[in-house]
Length: 168
Image: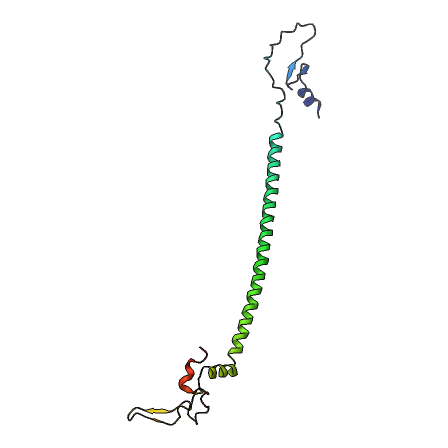
């Protein structure tokens, strides 16, 4: 920095710094100081007392207790639902076993030999060969009547007339 700039950068009179950071002229020796204007005093609030932490802690405790209670209720509901599900599953297994038993009985009853036996118990006879009806003259040609000796099966021991009420 040059001497000319340094000389202009310095104040011509000595100054004194104040707490406000501003500069005021320093009084010269021997000169009487002029009374400084009195500063206005103001009330400065002290440190505000801190709020109590008790309400906040109570809120946090209430939230934690509520969460714990909800967790316990949900756990109890899930356990009850699990028991109901297990009971329903057991009932379903029993019903499925029953359905399988009934299906087996239906399949046994639907077998051809079982159907023929049951039909004979009811007095039914096997069908004969089909015949043809001539509508012009009202005659039947071909075939044989059910229960006739050539029909492929003999009527039951009780005959065709009295077998309709047997067993019922």
